[in-house]
Length: 51
Image (cartoon, rainbow, N blue to C red; front, side, top):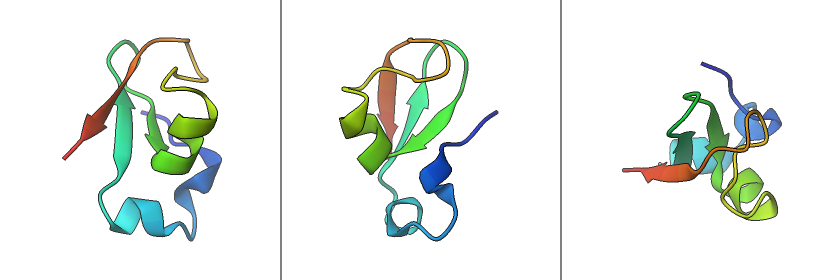
């Protein structure tokens, strides 16, 4: 499992706005997901929001 650069010191992780790639399991914060248009920067799979 990989995590985006926004992991350290990001309120997005604490507030639960985390996305997971359905293909590779990569985790990104909401800010990175919006910037990448809900596409995983690791493998270009679709990002799904975790609750």
